[in-house]
Length: 119
Image (cartoon, rainbow, N blue to C red; front, side, top):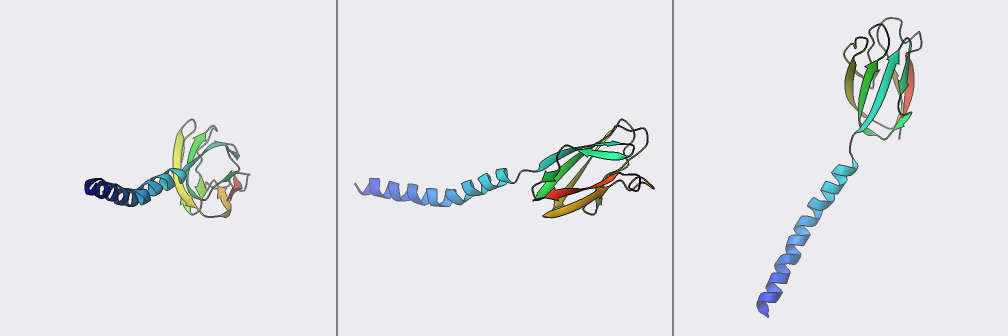
């Protein structure tokens, strides 16, 4: 009888140790990065989503235009993307309306800019 009680006590202790690890794993899965596809043309961006949850966001930027473009948001900028090519930019966003733009001369002024709502 004592062995059964001891075994149960050991199992209960093991579950108490494992429970936080299981909870952490579930939390990590819930904080998965968001991906937003961005189509760049002359002279506008088309984003697949108009809002995103705070945290890590992957922007997949495809240049469907005829001249080079880039994508700037939250202090981070993609490399220059040639026509027909795709680039990526990963940033961590805070809650608010976050401005984005193309930083090449004259592109933002011509309309390559906008705001992403982060919740």
